[in-house]
Amino acid sequence: MAIVRPKDSPAGDGLGREVAVVTLSAEGLRVARRLGECRLFVHEAVKGRLQAERFGSIMTLTRRLFRQSRKLVFIAPCGVAVRAIAPLITHKRTDPAVVVVDVGGRYAISLLSGHEGGANALALEVANRLGAEPVVTTSTEAAKDLIVGIGCRRGAGAERIVAAIRHALRRVHARVGRVRWLASASLKADEAGLREAAAALRVGLRIVPADEILSTAKRFQASPFVSARVGLPAVAEPAALLAGRRTRLVLPKTVFDGVTVAIARENCSSSASVPAVRRTAPGAPRRRSARAPSSSATRRTSISSAT
Image (cartoon, rainbow, N blue to C red; front, side, top):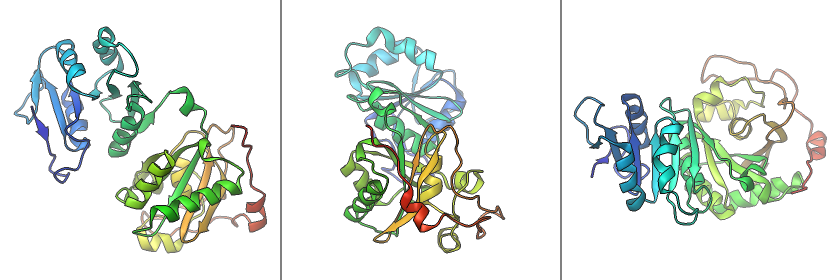
């Protein structure tokens, strides 16, 4: 059984041996290599010598993996994965988690056993590693509409981060149950405090690639201090805005005990937020093009907590 350790991923850094990754093409293989350590299965039509187990029939392979693995990732068309697993599905509490990724590495779709089997969490992990969009259609998750962006100093503790998140949610009269994701920039991906805070709140942590923050046209408050420190114009606000769809800030960045928090709401008819930042050369300090909202305006920011 092949274990893949890509050159750009340290040993042990990846999805893990318990995850079976299946691909039919050379394009899919390139995406698979970005996932880090995993059990890799590649169709025999893909040329070259590979550290992977070869297969000829995806139907035969899927029957075997359905019995052996609790987590499957198909890097293939969604229809192929559906036809492969359809005869094998029995119950959401016993079927393995199945995620489908397109060969462009743009979307990670939770296809089967999303909540009970862990496919929703797996889709998020895959998306974070690829810089892709996680697609989760579970009804209970679809009702959540808030994204909490977080910026913190290196080594910030989970308790401090959780306290800051709860404080920010109280400012907008919302409960943790409305939070779809916590979000931060890729430079914070290895922050233990962030991951522990997400686990404590039972909320997924979405990692936003730095290049998306640098290139986005979304409007947020830039900070010369943050830019000088980490090479990004900001972290909390753009992370909150970019981690969802049709987002709008409902709480601009606010600092609580050294942790910066911003909250965005998804599915807004207008995605306008705070004034735009003036774009300059990548990595250079960025300035606001208009005055930021006053503290009194921030205090008036609120949203309904109907759910």
